[in-house]
Length: 158
Image (cartoon, rainbow, N blue to C red; front, side, top):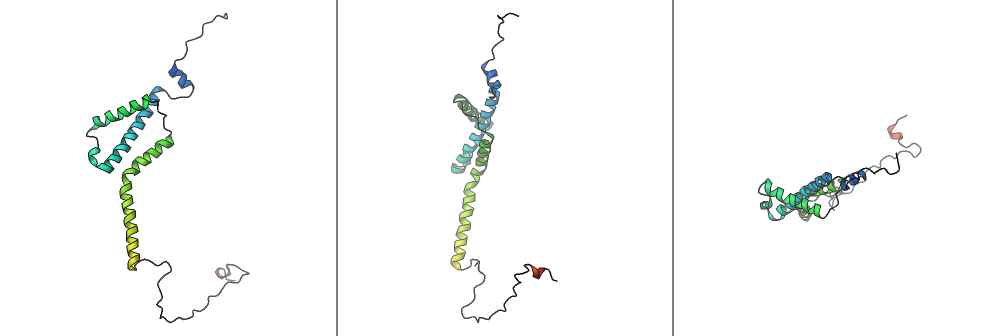
């Protein structure tokens, strides 16, 4: 072998990315598709919550057109791929968002009912029942106190 050996074929940009631990083009597009679907669902849920169910897509094709447009947008700006934790938080937000108005209504209704009960005197007194002012006060017998020498002796006779 002489020193004039020709180098082998140079790896393409996609192969270089894979060698460096970066995701392949298919992995990036798959991640963008997931992000686009999550984004679409969250926005549509919010719009349905605020304006009504007529914001739901009429059919699967209408939904696909919008999701594909979001994928193209994410790809064109080379958006960073979300981490699994970010995906989790987006999923939780998407799940809980439509339930927030009903939750707040229940919380406010509960607070209002508690205030009304207290105004009517029907609220629970944490100190126990009230003693009438003119009731006769009697002295109760004192309880025996355990000796300081043997803590817990009242539980273990002898």
